[in-house]
Image (cartoon, rainbow, N blue to C red; front, side):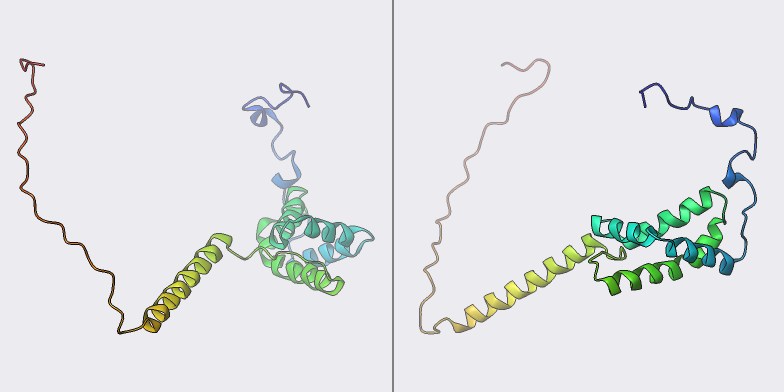
Amino acid sequence: MKTFERPIPGQSLTVEPKSQPYERPPEITDPIEALDVHMDNLSEPGAMEDALHILEYGIDLVSLVEGVLRSAVMEGVHSVDVSLIIAPAIHEFIKNFADEVGVDYEEGFENKDQEKALAYRRDVEAARKMLAEVKDEEEPNRDPLPVMVEEEQEPVQEEPVKTGLMARM
């Protein structure tokens, strides 16, 4: 695709209304029927292999399920509301299949930043405990390092800096 072969801004406003599948009423409104359609599609030869390959590639399970459901909404199969209702069932179906086959995947519910922050806090607490244990194990008869006390010096008064329009440089 060349750089200039893109839709012109506002071009979608010149298209016949309801010409896209997602602009029309969905084909299926019952969540049970929509779930059956998705289960049939995932049961087709090669469909689950593709899904597992995507999981192995590094895409998390939540994103995969969202992509499948979003595609069905764009094709006019069902509405977004139905997607929200059937998403957990499809998620569990693919998850169970991946677990049976032994595919290593990320589920997508984890918050990596939160996990890193929690691990950091655990490490800090472990370090504090170790330092406290080291201080307790030190010999009590041993004198700590002598503390050097600096003698107080009289502060040196500086001349005020003259600033302004007429000040000499």
